[in-house]
Amino acid sequence: MALIRIFNKCFIHLAIYSIICCLIFMGIANQIQLPTFEDLDIKDLNIDTSLDYGPDDGGAEISQPVAAFTGADKDHGSMMIKAVTLIRGQVNGIVRLVQVGSGPTLVSGIVKGLYPFSKHGFHVHEYRVTGDCESAGEHYNPTRENHGSPFSVQSHVGDFGNLVADGLGFSRFHVTNPKLSLRGKYSVIERSLVIHQRPDDLGMGLNHESRKTGNSGGRLGCGTIKFVSIG
Image 1 (spheres, rainbow, N blue to C red):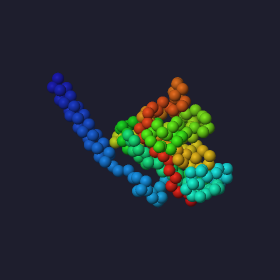
Image 2: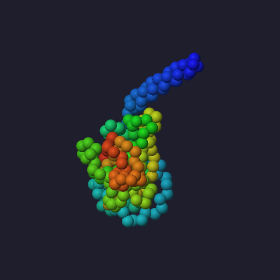
Image 3: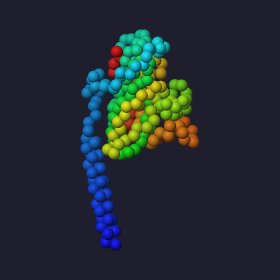
Image 4: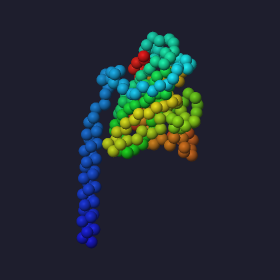
C-alpha cells in the first residue's frame, strides 16, 4: 500500500509539472510575432522552386487580378507567380504560394494558436475576405466536383486536407497542390484561405456535408490570397 501511495504521489506531481510546462510553452508560443504585409519582401518568399516542370502548355491565360497589378495582357508562359496570405482570426499565420508556369503550386506556411496536436480542415474559399471569415463564401469549386483530398480523383480546386498542430499549437507545412493555380480562369488570387475548427474527413464520411465540406465545421481563421510578384 505504501508503494502505491508513493507511486500515486509521484504520478500526480509529474502530471502537475507537465501541465505547468505546457502552459509556459504555450505562453511563449503566443508571444511569437508573425510578419505583416509591411514586413514582407519578395526575397522572403523562399519556397524551393527548383523543380523542373517541363515546357509550358501555353493554354493558360494570366488571371485578371495579376494582370491588374502588372499591366499584363497575355500568357506569361513558364514565368513564376508568387502570392501570400495572412491568416487572422482565432488563429494567425502566414501562407506563401508559388507557381512556375502551369506546374503545381507550392504552398508553404506557419499557423499559430491551434490546440496542441489538433487537426483542422484547410481550404480555398470562393471570395476575398471583406469582414469576418463567413464573407469568404463556400469552398472554391469551379469544376463542380465533390470534396476530397488534394490527390483524390474527385476534389475541389482548393482542398488541402488537414493542418496538423504540434505540441505548442503551431502547424508548419510545405505541400504541393497539383490542382491549385495562380493563373488562368481558375486562379485563386483574390480568393481566400480558411482554417476550420474540426478535422477534414476528406469526403469519406457518410453524409452530404462530407462531400461538400469534409465536415470541417466553423472557421477559426482566414485571409485573402494576395498577388506578390511575377517574373
